[in-house]
Length: 388
Figure 1 (cartoon, rainbow, N blue to C red):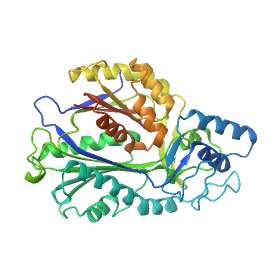
Figure 2 (cartoon, rainbow, N blue to C red):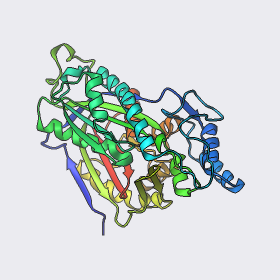
Figure 3 (cartoon, helix red, strand yellow):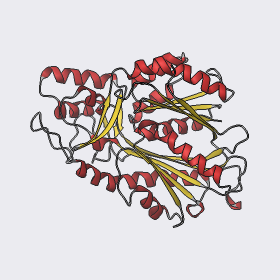
Figure 4 (cartoon, rainbow, N blue to C red):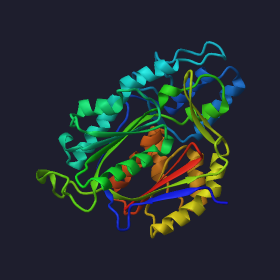
């Protein structure tokens, strides 16, 4: 029996939301591959056998650099930071969840503001024209939080209506686009700012737990934002900005979801006493290979598309094995996921922000449409969006 699949069709006889502008932001400093691997060794390993396994794991990630708000300079060989003290004993678990949350409340608004300012500028929309704000994050929470900070820092109207998409994991940008598209459909004058900000490096886990070491080897920090309004008109933009310089990057034509049965233990994201604890089961790639194609064939057919008609695959790079599993299941060409792999190499897995980094590269390349955004999260849940 097929897992439960749901679709929101925004294409036929419905109002589509246009992505008018995008912006991305990364921390000021980043760590190279060797520095990250050496740090993991110090924080997790107590035997030479563990050290060898961790070093091999980091080599296989395909990640060359990753940014972190915790870094005070660039590091190629060794990471020195004050937030994570050295491992004292195998029972040591590092900073408490409150310490990590306090740092999130300090750092997240800064990165989110940078990405949002770029999105506003590229869209030709001014801050006072924003009517709705959608924030996406699974790496920290506070109230008042990032949404209120963005209203204050960007100068958004005090009447800005807010939606927070929380704890949805790596596919959270699709959930955010779905919410933003609903707001656009409900109001002809809506200008929606959607911002995803993830500070994954705040949740590094001490100790030698294989599943958590895998997640620690992948994640990094980043933020991305988009501005959306109705696709069929530029009326929501002011007259003095409504020109050819501010067109549409693409329209959100449809979104869909697919819950894989009996897969709750495949990927988890839980709040522990020492940060948020991510686990990735070795069976995730196999589940993707088994279930992805049948869902995508049916879902794309419902949108009048096929796997072959898709011109850009923005597959979330949850890791190199995740990308290979998607590539194998869908029988994609060897270079179909090259942008996903390059974003992973350049930045690491920035959770929900990552797919928007891929979309921006598609836009910069002038890649023909349609594009498909595809992400995987706890459930095991598959989320998809069609961009035309």
